[in-house]
Length: 220
Ligand code: ATP
Image (cartoon, rainbow, N blue to C red):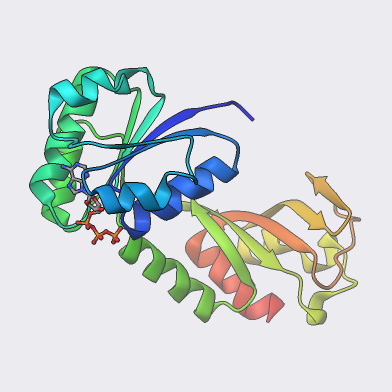
């Protein structure tokens, strides 16, 4: 895994959780917040922490933020500060700028100023949990594009012991199993003869509808 330097601006619930996880994953993280208390709470958990106002260009410059590979603007309520910080980070030349948006309008502005990735933590999590509740065998999914999704589906007792040929999701539902994660091994590009066992995890690619139909008709 490449070693990446991150700057996280705003150490509220989202920013502090994100920055701690990045640190635990072995990356260097600079946490910035203008609230001294928030910074104190995180000071022994991140590589560096600093009390600073991220809407001040000179401050960001002196912190050397432009040398970071990725900066995340995790400022919550203050939309103006979030936009200002994002503009400055882009202007300073940070390669990847990620920002948390509160509203659609906020997201539109962030997009216009060239923010590379916009996240809506509560909204995104709501959508994710809804999918997991509706499809009990769905562990997680990634939207590859508007049309295509990669999903992790747990093998249920019902289909345990079947080969991929017997299950045949491509012919029956249009989606393909691209990998099977077993407790001790991962089978990449499985063949028709590979056998599924309960609790294996299938990595499936297809449209959302194909995967939903596969999950509800064949696995559940
Ligand atoms: P979360 O949902 O992540 O908890 P929140 O609703 O607590 O977010 P805020 O408190 O508005 O969101 O912002 C998150 C953090 O961003 C706060 O700790 C706040 O002090 C910090 N912050 C806000 N503006 C600035 C700024 N200009 N520079 C640095 N930090 C800032």
